[in-house]
Image (cartoon, rainbow, N blue to C red; front, side, top):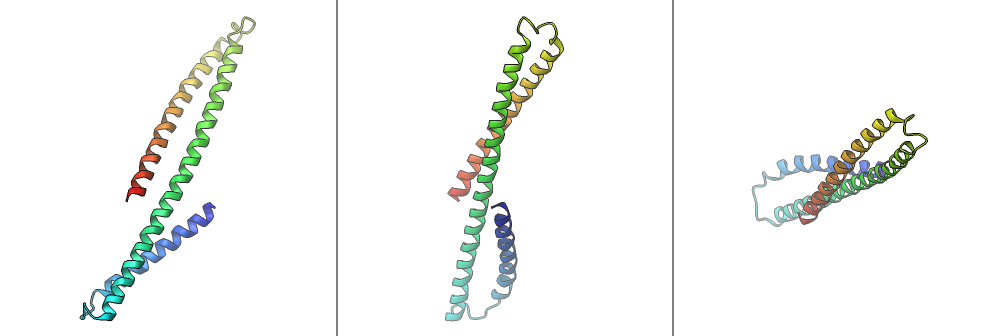
Length: 138
């Protein structure tokens, strides 16, 4: 799906470049109110609105992909958090407490990093949601 989306974006960018060239040549029409000029202007407006729709759709698809990846990371961090907490419980048990003293510090550090990563992921998901709402409202 990502490959198709890239092709779609490249096609949209190619059309945008072509439309810019056409806009420059069409503005020199001496008869601004002739039927031919009105048809050209109408065609340009339709093409412009189609291009904007493609761009918005493409942006929404990219946002959806970002959200999916961020949610995957969030699940991974939650799983890692659970596993590290289980490890810490084992390390703190009566049998291993003295042997694993150095490892306990590393697990505490890993939990701190995971908390930071989970917070960043949550903030990024909020930004994706805000951006999606902005694109949809536009």
